[in-house]
Length: 132
Image (cartoon, rainbow, N blue to C red):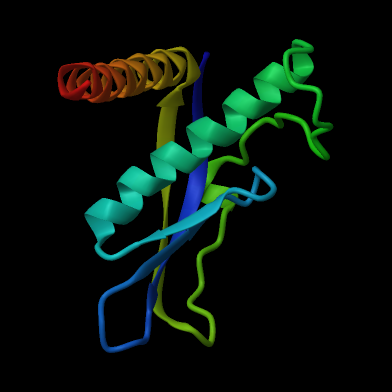
């Protein structure tokens, strides 16, 4: 599924550049980044992750109860972004994710991890066999 949700970005008032991101419509979805670019990437990742969990719970593939459900996104013009006591500036933008593509990316990472693990085990086994 493809989704688009508004996200609020806030730049911290600390000396170093740090951005905090939260999604008003997706309870528990928040992240940060050391730069605006990194915060945008992290926002896509956390949104996709939350939506995948919600989809899995709805489909019965996840036994952990989810407190909330997928809700329709608030129109961007209705989302207000104001700096708070920890930030100097704030803005709202839309973040789009494709949960099907996200699942494929997660599967590819699992396969790569398994291949690395098997290669490591094979290397250890070969080394031990040679030493015996």
